[in-house]
Image (cartoon, rainbow, N blue to C red; front, side):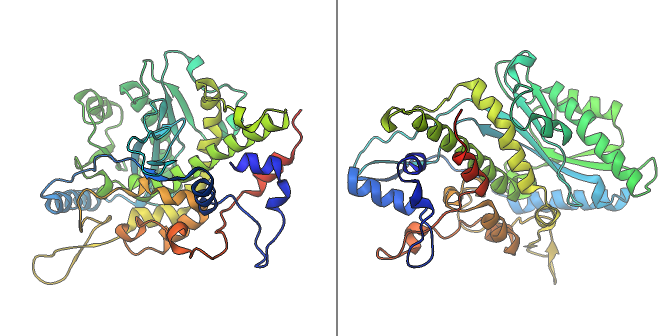
Length: 411
């Protein structure tokens, strides 16, 4: 809709109203337009919620004590502690809701069943560094990777990104890709930190990951013991990813929002290009082929990397504290929030769909101001509900660089 309006009435985005604001194709505007013209309302799909172990507090306390024990006994500094998390990045990400006729019983949400995706491994150190990304694409040859001519490809390589094909029809990480991550990203990072901080050559380091099948397999653990005996593997307890996995609790919310914003920019630019070429609005079809989306994914990753590669964000995530019930007087402090309040199946903050109404900077500011993981996970006030019916449209941010890109004549 943004692309169509920009093509038909471009001045709408530059003229100001009585309040001094410029028009933006906000969620509130879309709601009113679709309701008044098509009698469509916002319909939401449902999904199963994650369940935590019944003794989750005990499990997390034991995990924390093990973590503290290793840090104390091995004298491990913050720069030598890395948490890593693998996440799925969907090529054509859709939300949990869509616009459809009011009262419709069967609602199809575009992108909800999208299976085309790739795996992204995100790692951060306790000292505030984001390690280079590893992206794993399905396929058996290098032809399954983004083209070297893809926008942002050179910058990604300069940042140390590791782009790999899985060697199979799936995009999941396997023994080979995990070993490549350790040998090409993790171990070099640790060695650099050891040298930078003048630590002994025998310095031990911590690598915290999920207890996923590949991670806890005898093959991977034996390979680590033989090749990197100085790296200690500590696992996030099963079913506790949303509570004790630092790269999942916080970073993913900002990262995925930045990725989705960049993907949206691609759709807007493509729509405008088609309209400029004379295509009727109702005939515009966005290119959803795998090669095109795969090439675009490089820019998505760069946008996400720069959004989270800020020490204040990383250290906030890695050192956010909460209190566990203490035996006796006083309280025990954890590196992450472990008290589960309310519904144990509450959505993780990665799925906060109302974030799409806000900029990455706004969501980041809310996160940095939070005093706990639960507080930081709360969605921003939805402008659809916060504004009264007679108020001005709410305004969402449109990047200046996108406007300049859209104004560039299509050749």
